[in-house]
Length: 186
Image 1: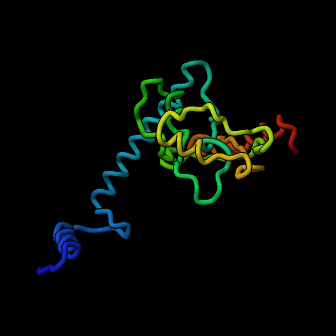
Image 2 (image 1 turned 60 degrees about the horizontal axis):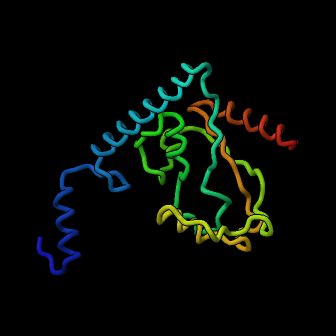
């Protein structure tokens, strides 16, 4: 196969490397997908065992109540981080030396765990001022801190999330009903 430009040569090299391999519509090689699914299933089993093991401390955790994001709902097209709270929940379940997945992964989706997000309050532009003395911990933290302004976020919902185990959607909804009732909502 002759090629004339660098990009064309790279495409030709890639095509030769994939020759004879079955590709899925996503461009993933069929055999690689099986490996990825096996890794996902292994992680799901590990996490399910850790959840079940909470019963050794008295009673199994029914649901997890956690933030769905790093703060109030962000303006459209501004949020960079998906599954921001992942590491904090993993630390609660597995201990402080947990290094399973980075903070930016949406592990509830990976685990196929049901969840529901509900508003708790709204940003009050007069009360929720920017903390000018705050020193960001890292680049991600700086991005989030610099994005915030009381005027931009005025009346944005601040929410929490309830997450349950696979096939326990009804338990998640029941927990939401109880929390809503405790908050004085109909």
